[in-house]
Length: 480
Image 1 (cartoon, one colour):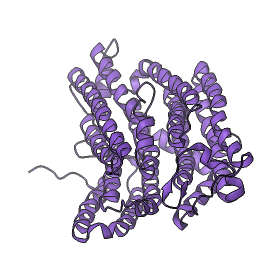
Image 2 (cartoon, helix red, strand yellow):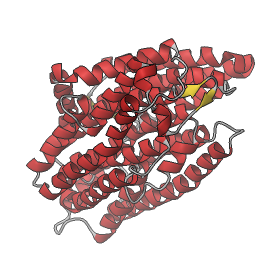
Image 3 (cartoon, one colour):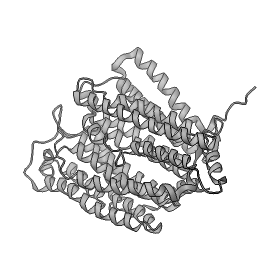
Image 4 (cartoon, one colour):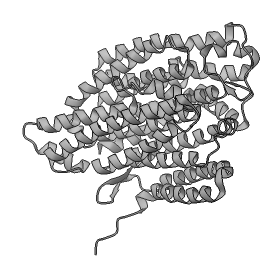
């Protein structure tokens, strides 16, 4: 009789899977009137999963025949994913009610997507990697087109599905090449096979790695695999766009790091050149393409592409310091982004949402607290010291310089200078232009999230040490 796998490392994932099934049945019996109840229950389940993650193993325990691993890196990234997912569900409550979209499937889809993300982070095998990735992706395709009476939302979902399916196919082809030339899908076995080769990895493995990198670059929206981002960000319902910009990005980066530093860590000299190109082109395109945007969701889409380029700089370094910088960057990115999207979500007059950047004109005169919070987030995204965004960029730039990536660091600094233009333009509109019509006051939940994110972003420089230390522990877990 086959021995049962050790389920303890996977308790958080099993909890999310069981809860999704129970809440789906509950919603099917109670109907859409249960949406708010299911939403808060989902947030509670995520909080409980976080408790299990913190109290669970973090010393590299493997289970399910070596396909699932629980280590310090996974613990840190899973907590970020749960935080991002939980906050976006809370942000969505008012929007769903005001736009007649209160359907119980919404929080359950986010829960299933979160389950897929956690499986991605914990993957120790190409098969479990793909299963987690597809569970996340299928949920996100539906969420992008969740507003069924909107042509833009339907178009966004369709574009994301078609391009996402293509990217998944590319990734799967890369995985099949790696399997064919190494004889295994397990990360440790692949690493051992590559290390055993006298003259380095075979051409087939390098081709497979190139295809894997392309598929993962699509998931993080790195240039030239970014083409879906502006259209999906603009067309999807705003809370869904907020979700896309935080949790799935964090999960995709965690997967990117685990794949590159795990089975292919011995080939860093080969793949780091590809990451350098992805990083540089993402930063440059993100900085320049955002300048001409008048729709704030499209501007944030191009802004996120530029910010992703900065995060890739940490991966390109392929050192513990680089991964530490990347982890810290994604932590601060979560706080800045969720706060900015909470304000964008509140750009509404009555029940109608506005998305033009000019609609922020004179916000400081009408709603000074909201304008102050938005200014904090914009200054931080621009990398102005002493806000959190400055430290996020500082640590990855430092890692790039330590790794000898001087040209990439210079491109990063110049891109940040160019990118400052469109962030500062928003601040100029809010504080120096004539006031537009006042926005509807935010709900209590949205107001609390904006306040907490603004305070964290503003005061991070007073207490960076715990976050830096935890990011260091998480990064070192990959280099044991």
